[in-house]
Image (tube, rainbow, N blue to C red):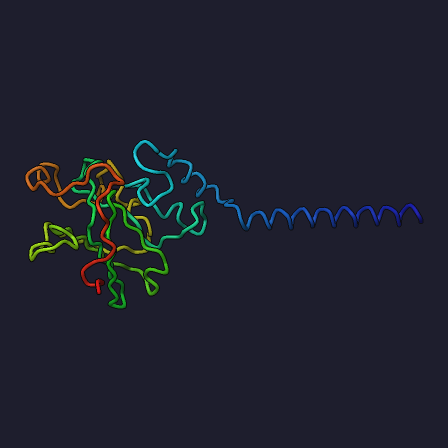
Length: 224
């Protein structure tokens, strides 16, 4: 009888230890991403390229699916509800559009405007667009001299509008895949459909990024 009672205590102790172990794993899982598909997607992005742009800044990884890392699954600290990169043409990775006005319209007739940085990147956090609801319609405009002086500063150089809506995807590059134009991807977001058109238009293309050129923090409709 004593032996049986001792075995019961042992089994109870083992059960408590197992429960504690499960609880520990559960608490770790709440702070770590255990989704193998998401982890594989993040790993497939590869390493940063510090020789081109500062890692883990608003300038890094142009043309990549921003919201893959900037999501609730991480590993980035901030979450984006929409983000992407704007290019001048369909094939040149180095011709990105700085100071472009990206206008986003939702189903409740709420339009917000965001400005690309010198690497052509833009991003929208939930606090930037509190009433954001999908589907979304998006347009991109680049003017002569954004926020510059003179009557022609805000004269449009080029405006492009998406012919379809964004259903739910937060990363533009998930559909607009770099270097791929086929039935599965329209290619990178571009202001002109050919690089020869870009050559003729000769739009302003920023040099190295980041640079000393002052950024444009707001679109015209948001300026005081």
